Amino acid sequence: MKAVVLAAGEGTRLRPFTVSRPKVMIPVGNRPILEYVVSALVDNGVRDIVLVVGYRKERIMSHFADGKKFGAKIAYAVQEKQLGTAHALTVAKRHLDGDFLVVAGDNLIDGRAIADLVGCRRVPAILVTKSETPSKYGVVQVENEKVVRIIEKPEAKIGNIISTGTYWLNKELLRTVEENVGRDMIGITQVLQSLIPMMALSAVHTTGRWIDAVYPWDLIGVNAAALTIRGQEIAGTVESGVTIKGNVSIGAGTRIRSGTYIEGPVTIGEGCDIGPSVTILPSTSVGDGVQIDSFSLVSNCLIMNNVDIGSHSHLSHSVLDDGVTISTGLAAPAGMAFAKVEDEFFKLERVGALIGEATEMGAGVVISPGSIVGSGCRIGSGVRVTGNLENKSVVV
Image (cartoon, rainbow, N blue to C red; front, side):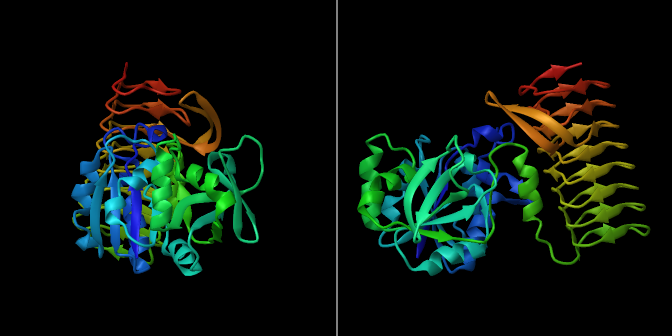
């Protein structure tokens, strides 16, 4: 069986974390989101994979290459303009014959979810799950395991069963999708909804893992879910006087200095320098080449590559992109916040700071909960940041 993985989009609502990478390449648990998707397919014997790429496609193609490293055979189809999922599927048509899976490359999905779809043996089929926030997705109304209606992002509460954007389709439906793309139907669910009166579309419920990151703060929860470490995997150097509890992974070339306390699940990449006397609490991932100086505390954070965190800093429920540099004494506590993305306002129960790549901060900076700091910003010492900063902002 083949699978088409849709990985062409930018993920505009996740800015600034998609400034230099597509959404599918955001690392959670120190692996790109798309890598979890590929692994879930391979684990179910689906090794013939077509990646539909577009925005920043080089980042994807250089990482996955021909797929051999991941146990897969990967081909690429390029969507030059991001015109929706239906159009994305049609650009992969030359690679397809017979039945095939369609999977969104920007959702964290596990092998159990793919197994549920493959095991249903009914084509066409859509994988559905329950959601606490169904208004963000396509709500699926089901009767006798058949889809009777799909409503995209409904304003009223009409149910909590949603589409995961994962399908089992065939060549005949692909032709229909292609015909409807010319009629301004940009989403696969739009096309399927129009066909429901004429076909039996099976709804396959899954209890497997499926998590989407729509907004920057969603990455904190996705990162926590991705930390499926079992036991302690220590390849680096751990000095005497270090306390490690629970499931913790430490990469090669990393040094954990004396007095440091780490409580898992935590993963730390290669070539890092942590401590002395640093505290890292659960649900934290630390990328490669990261330095965290003495007497700093990091809790439930996603820290990407080549980040430098000065001493006496405190970060909770925060995301730091590649190359962020912090002098000393950063305070980025978690708390209730009101955040704004694309003219929408959100009340968040618990969030810290969301900081874009290559941003530099002076000493004693305070970032209010829910603040989104763009990439390439320069923030002077003693500044308090409240609200959002555009890319390349300078605050003194």
